[in-house]
Amino acid sequence: MTAEKMEKYLWDLPNQFRESLQNLPVLPDNYKIGYQNIVVTGMGGSAIGGDILRTYAMEKASIPIIVNRDYTMPAFVGKSTLVLAVSYSGNTEETLSAYEQSREKGARIIVISSGGKLTEMAHRDGFAVVPVPGGLSPRAATGYLFAPLALILEQLGILAGVQAELKETAHVLEELRADIEPGIESAANAAKRIASEMKGRIPLIWGSSAHTDIAALRWKDQINENAKTMAFYNAFPELNHNEIVGFKMPAEMLSNILIVILRDPGNHPRVQQRIAITMPIIQDSVYNILEIEPRGQSFLSNFYSLIYVGDYVSYYLALEYGINPTPVETIDYLKAKLAKQA
Image 1 (tube, helix red, strand yellow):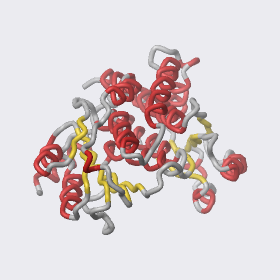
Image 2: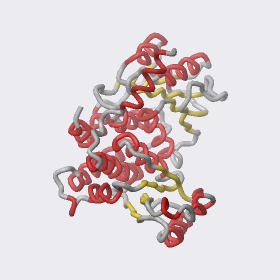
Image 3: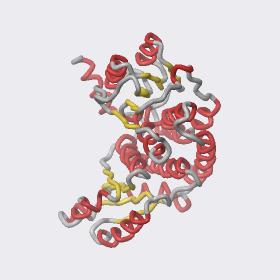
């Protein structure tokens, strides 16, 4: 595998939204019931779509949506629960276990996958399957793994306006891509400049709860997996109650931290004030503070524009370190060792 493979993955993200809109999920009538809660179960790159859905739906849905990253399901899962089982490969062992528990508890299940055992089990049990294209790395399939979830909830009447926001998001990302794709030189390419400044530093990504905290998590995960380096994240206002005190010692380590703040015009006014007050408190302790502004009008376009910049930053950081961003040998090794001990 080469770095060009990840470059193609990044380029194709807007197309994932357009393809999802062209292949709208059609659910049997027996799924159209009154649910009390929704659980998205998955791991890693397959779970991030659930995190985005939870954030997106927080101010739209009248029932709770949670994300489960485990072998077991919460005790409340039952006949009034909609379980969205997401595994890009269809073979993630934690998700297979959670699926079986959901079935035993009588939940209604919809599988989102490119195939594998999970799809086979759903067909066996008579549950709906929303197929997504295969051949990608799970972390490169975020559009395929989020858009169907939101479209399912729109079809069930739990969310509204999803299709319009996905269309706008695809358009905004295409415009953003023209500014940060590899053919644009560093002087005019914000993602390349951020990656250059991040090289040799410890990235700390800050978002805000219920708005950009999952975008910050995505930045961290992409830097981990693509650039093979450590990164950390946190969110306002919680970080003002603990992490902010930690910028005293050790000074030599703190001076190597690069903070990236993901802004959102929808933040609570007090959160905006907290950000403004916090930056001067820590600016002399850390290497630098960068602020990233979103693009677009809707929540989804704002959110995904921040994610897209982070995806490209992680790719360029990998190139800065001379690393192929695509393989994740450590994860592959861990899965192989676990498979031998199953």
